[in-house]
Length: 95
Image (cartoon, rainbow, N blue to C red; front, side, top):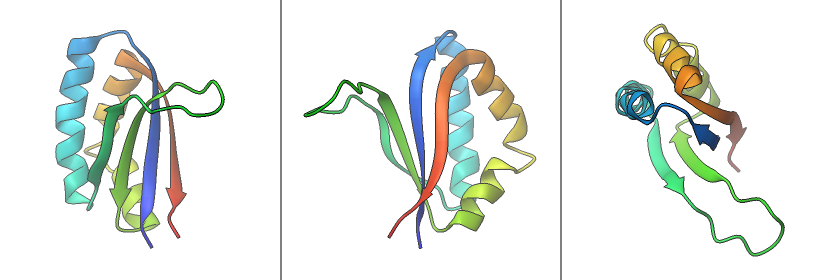
């Protein structure tokens, strides 16, 4: 069953650093089967006030998603992201 990583970008304080993060993180995700499905999209909100900038990444399964997130190669990139941007991030299993 596919697992999706949903990221809400609340703000970017260092655009150059965040660009570096995006480039390097994409390469590491691919090694774990991660596929970028939505990147920085501004959704067409039909109800409510939620206006996030979204990123959605599909992984083959929860094990691969968590293995990537906890991997040694991602740890310095996670620190870079946390320095450059405010995000909310979660994993959710597909149906």
